[in-house]
Image (cartoon, rainbow, N blue to C red; front, top):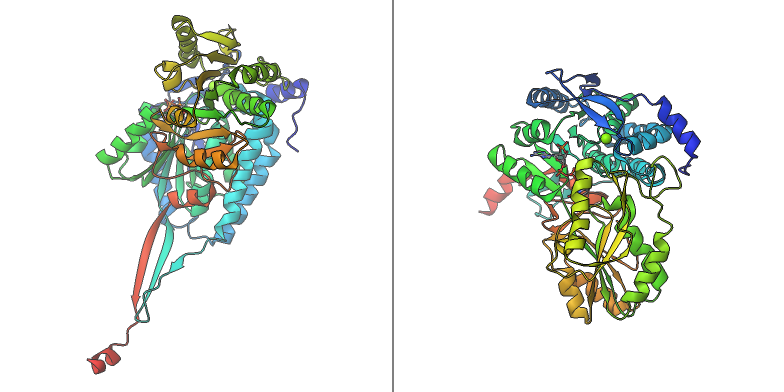
Length: 505
Ligand code: NAP
Ligand code: MG
């Protein structure tokens, strides 16, 4: 069902697309109060796709008012879990019906290869919504062991009005990771997509409404971080913000919370993730395939990208040779061509940031093992650079582009120290043929997700988020994500028989 189409078919879908351009609040599209707009473009071609509403704090205020009304009158949160489940499953089915349109819109707006949108982003988005929907009527609250004189219950209640502030690298999927559990819990949601990638978020909100999610429950306010993200973060009537993006912006949301109403903040931030290859790795072809996938999937615009290859000195040359062989399968070019696995970077600004790291390779006189070329002013070829030390910016900073740095080690203790030599702690991969080494390294590396003999992000059942400066306050995905969007309430009911108590006394 999610097999890629042909280039001609994708072009035909692209030609027929209608782009949503207004904010979506209280069940209807509306322009920004100011009437202002911003342009959204296709980074691969530079073509302007649409003029989107450039909202500001007055639009945020209106969306919060409507979201609050919808929360308080109970039109969503007071439905039975089974009823919310049915509506969310209908929503997932509508996404499924519109999967080709969504994949093409995502590719045009972000530069991502349509093949990935079609086979990963869109199906995972649908699965995420469905998974959280299916979970709602299987969650039980607690009664607590307090003895015969009281009944104590701990119940989960939806936290209220939730702001979701999203990045541009997986626009649909990050949206689903937040709204799946938030809507399942019964919250009202206001989404602020990244300016670079607003189109699919708006279309998804429209489809959610069509599926029967009531007006005011899922709202989208488009605009910049300053004009929309900051007022959401500072709003006195927003109960929680779920954010995915860079660590510096995530940090701001903690300030916003402290400066306003102490709203709950959950952050998924950056990563500088190691792929550690031990001398005893069993199958270097498999390692090469997984490392290439980890480093270059989504052009490396991926918080979980394996951007640091930390490899035993004895196997480095052989591994780099095999990595080169796998890289030949990763063709760079037109994102709408399903043959291509590497599309355009998301924007000219981001391209400048990524290519500044190619400049570092020259100034540090490092050796490029593979790749290194740019083209069309927005495409960067997957690149592998050798001899990177822990002091280099290439080793320390998140590049968020298709550049893999290679550092060697001689002992396992050195490998662990290098893997942990970062302020981030999102993901890591370990490649070894030894069960003992696999377990020891999985425990010693400080990261929210460690994969062994593969690269990946787990599945819908496993939590995702980081240690250290990679995250704060909670996890996306899995049943743990549900807790982000809930408050715990203790209800204590005195059932003591006072007449008996008095007699005893
Ligand atoms: P970003 O610049 O931090 O932006 C993220 C979101 O925050 C955007 O919607 C942005 O709006 C908004 N924003 C920017 N400045 C703001 C401010 N002062 N106040 C409030 N909101 C503000 O990150 P990005 O460039 O979109 O995404 C790339 C980063 O996200 C990378 O560092 C990556 O590691 C991280 N990321 C992390 C995960 C994870 O799960 N841990 C997943 C994906 C990405 P505008 O851009 O529209 O102005
Ligand atoms: Mg765009």
